[in-house]
Image (cartoon, rainbow, N blue to C red):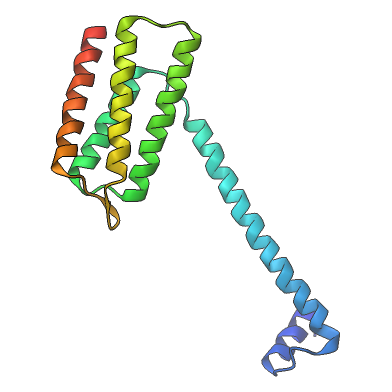
Length: 163
């Protein structure tokens, strides 16, 4: 009989505190907790690296199309709340990185400032929509839906003027 079988045997027969196997039982329990925590840490690390790889949005047009999708989800009242929050946060961080890039490139024209301001307003509205959680779904009030739609229209108008 190997050690694991002996431990199981003593555990089943109520002799869990057998002197000879108590230290081995504690060792196996401790090691199982360590393995579980290491596995969780690896999945968290993978998630962070996935987010870093997604930060490749480099154009205003892609942000506008992402905003269109998020607005569509927010208005539908069928968007999964946790997924929508993640997407809205990703949108905000993508906008932030794009604004930092534009600042480094000295792109300070009046049109780009207006577009960025409208994108920031859209980001704020999407964050507000992310807070409108009912159960597992995003359910926005009518006023917020109207604001999202009008902001979406403004974004498209400015994008068409800029190109």
